[in-house]
Image (tube, rainbow, N blue to C red; front, side):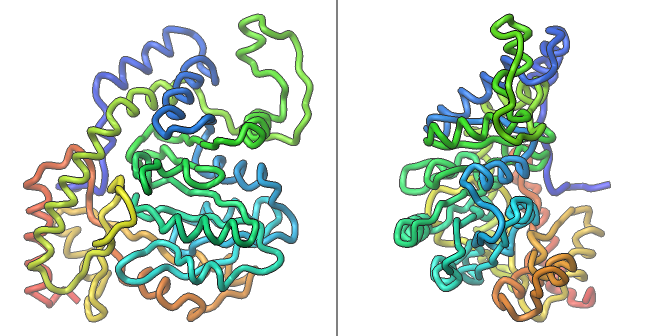
Length: 382
């Protein structure tokens, strides 16, 4: 359907071979491939612990639980994010408190508004490195230390991104990664938790697999014959197939991120001469992983008209994101209304995400930009 889709996994024979080796082994549930994936990811992020889980939502849920967040607590988080971030706070019985973004040039959460939202009930700050562009972590960590709060990094967009020489996922107390199909490191469904805390890692490993003291692999290998259950746990395990794909994707990640950066540079160079929109993150706080390429349409440009025009040109686009606090569930249950976060709400109405993935050709970017020029010049698409 699409001449240029929004994303592409970029899988090749290496992923196919890795999956086949798992199938040939006869062991499909979490085992040695998962352990290897964890070791290699921990080394890449430069943390003591990496814990592979079934998806990024599971990672965020376990992170909140491990930090002791529960009934009556508050966690400050962005509204310009995927809804899983706020949902996982509610899973614990806590309340998500939404903070404003920095502005039209930076869609990341604002440290100033975080501080304005802190109360005696605040237990943690959960941030998202939007589009793979690191947040102002110095300001956020300073607030966390000042008020005695924990910091959860939602790194769904940012495997390989860096802040002040540290990989995202190694700055806060816990980092949470998603390996969904459209991510820089994709396995279909999967996630990873990173931390330097032995205690947090131990608790999250227990909760990942029903709170059991030994795993099925331990019993399969004869390392144990039974188990105890010492935590209320979940079935948040990853499997061997996705772990094997993840190992191959790890080998490609740095090269693919470099390619994403080059494509982003071409976009930025072309957009200097295109009116009707602006590109955020001109001054990123660190090294971006360039997960997506967001643009902000001018107020007089119809987003639906723009996206339909691009669709006619065979270019898929998307929106990142509708504001969480304005979803019907959040309006009904938490009383949020329009005007609570005016900058977030305006960005949520004007943002469009353009295709960005390593197998894109340079000419694909030029075709997209040429199509946008045509779109803006015709002006009869509104």
